[in-house]
Amino acid sequence: MANNFQPLVDRILKDGKSLEGGILKVDGFINHQLDPILIEQMCEEFTRRFDPNSYDKIITIEASGIAPAVILGLLLKKPVVFAKKKKPSTMSNMLVTEVFSFTKNTSYHVCVSGEFLTKGDRVLFIDDFLANGKAAVGIIDLCAQAQAEIVGMGFLIEKGFQAGGKLLRERQIHVESLATIESLDNCTITIAK
Ligand code: G4P
Image (tube, rainbow, N blue to C red; front, side):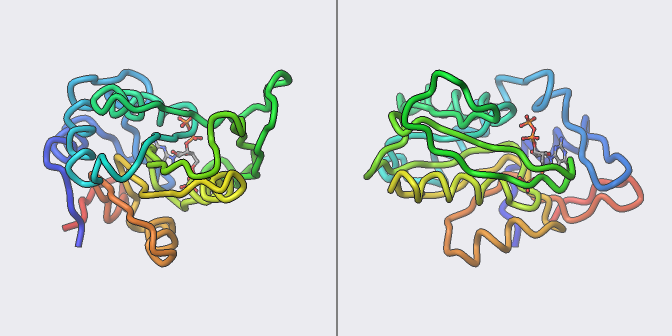
């Protein structure tokens, strides 16, 4: 059963658009223009769903995960690390993994410095969308390389009709999604109950 956060659901139904190919466009408040008030409310909800004492650091992947991750970090006074999609030439002790994007039908590298993701770190992963879960699996791999512990994964929007949620929950990961979309068929947004 979905555990939806009503202010986000209301906003998706008001301003979200369902595009051809099962894509939910939310660029008026998450992916392009940002609504900091809604993002703060969503992060407060994350502080209720994940015990703030259970993690020391928040991790995300650029670009759209950064805004909620930083607001959560600000609320809890915890550091935020964002994994990068381009390998910086100056990064030392780099951990790298490969992620395949179904949405974009291409693979890309995700990397993080071993300076900022280290053995014993207890991390919460935050991202905007959970679709097929490939980005999340990339983060699991980076954390394994660093010997860091993933305490949970929080998503603003889960596409319940794609495989990511099942995949992560089967791995016993504590997953929380603030709005779960049941279907985008016929360009209509149906929220999971
Ligand atoms: P996955 O990580 O769950 O496997 O997702 P997938 O490869 O299918 O998605 C690749 C990118 O597309 C991700 O963003 C993901 O957040 C985004 N995405 C997936 N489905 C939707 C959707 O229905 N609506 C929107 N708006 N985005 C979707 P990204 O490439 O990392 O982009 P960004 O974080 O740089 O914005």
